[in-house]
Image 1 (spheres, rainbow, N blue to C red):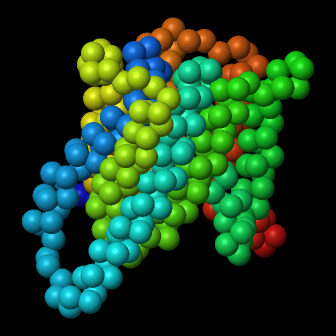
Image 2: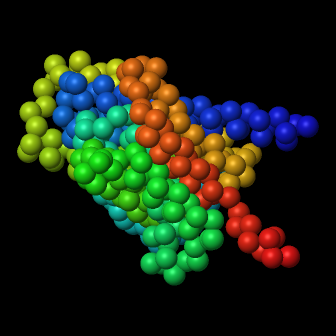
Image 3: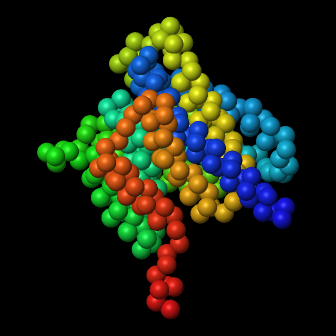
Length: 304
């Protein structure tokens, strides 16, 4: 009974995480009214790194110190730095593509297209000689139909914003694969903290080159930046760590994939955005693809 209660609590925490991530699409869209995409990302990603520092200190106090030699400690630091830089580069590119793309498309569409990383990750795994489940191929088929309905116009052209967000989904997929490689080797929270600082620094380069950041404009965008930086990066990440402790990975990923639905609802409730019937059907196809991609392969059961 106690375990069941923990699972329900953890599931609710993951649902709140998905809600924060989904609604952060609105913050990203609103923030663009005051600052450029690189300025927004540079500030909020750096803020995300700062927010995780207290969490690292707190978790460090609760962890039992491992007796490791100087060489091992040095090796871990190098791996953490390499992993943080690699993740930071992928995150900077993905976040920039997403931020620019949101200015040309709706929050709801951006949420569903971004969520395609769940389908793309297993496909990219083919290049790493990983097997792709039958259900993933079904998901690819459904996702293709969904993306066509959401993004392809009558002239068989994809919208600029939708294309940028789709490219963002590919880079988020690469980002996940990089995390998958480094996370077993280093502390996950520290890795995330380093990647936020690296991506924040990288986004600040085009910020100064192509934009004219002003303190006044950044202050005007304070609410969406603080929400995207503190809530999306800091709070949501912490809730995810706590929530996943008592929930199976498949269920956790299914709950977190609700981010796309919350993005569409937030865009409708807060920004008054609406989707056409065709786009709604496309979103349903994409959501079905996201769910199927995370389910166990059922073929062996069907054959028996």
